Image 1: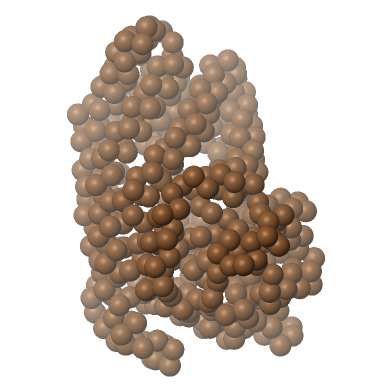
Image 2 (image 1 turned 180 degrees about the vertical axis):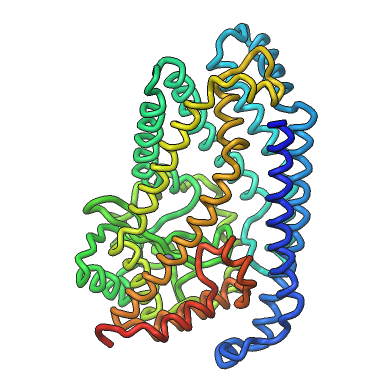
Length: 469
Ligand SMILES: [Zn+2]
């Protein structure tokens, strides 16, 4: 009964999501001309482009979603989990261990599971990157770069998730009645460590981060940061254009050590430090990250550069980039990131607590085909991904509402800094560069958008009464 309910619920969610996507798809099909409010800023050909891109992504999403749903149903229905567990026992035996080693057994299970996921997902991500994104001019990766990137991603994520899995199983085993507190503390510590080391050591494995060259933009950003007492330590440009032409900016860091990262695609004209004559004058500022990227094929870079020129996007001018950062600093001023972390950690603690209540209910796991052996990893997996799925759905819905509120707050903050017009024009340019479709079905956007639709943001910005301007 439980098993059928879980499967049934996953289909209810799937059908609901498909219904929402269908509503949004009809909008792409039916809204064929630029909405009135945007006629002065978007021309029909940009709008058509963005519409075709949206339609392509939506069709891709439909097939990908259908496939995933059938795949996961088949795995559950045919007993894929117990099969994989038994198979990892056999592999473990071949390595000379008995399957008594629960932690080792679980690690082999995790590894085999990820390999399976990787292989079944590969055709989809290849198709998305090299057909869908390519067709609309967003893909900047060569096949070689894509595969190298995938291997790196896999190695890094396994290097993090395997020890974490082992530690959690251990804590659940030995933690006693309050294991859920210890398990949560463990997750908390590891996520704090990751938040600290990710930008410094992990992100540079994937992308090139260079200090923003001296100039008007750097001066203006520093002035803005100073005027708000934002402890800006480092200002980087990341070569986002190496993988995709979508543009963005973000910031990170703790306490008095904040960094801002701008995607090179966000900037109207940007020449990396290393490719101009200022190499020497800036070499003292080159972050550690740069030392690691050197062996990754310079020949590739040259081709990329040519390609960049052909598809160079508009990008934002200095004032607009500063306005975008005004928005980002709004997130900082209102502690949005901290609030998100607190909510997330609270939810993890709650989940571990509920898991503690359920973990000794053998019937649950028997329903999933684990009759005599009920390993902790399997119990965690079943509870967290299947039993919690109704809660996860609601949580993600609420988090999107919250996130859209945060975006409005950050916009208002930027308006209060006197950046209303610049932020508006920056958002419009980003919208054009990213070919985001400006019209959204209200139900679909309520479920999926972490950022409010462009039109709503522009309208809201007009209503804010700035303290200065
Ligand atoms: Zn934002």
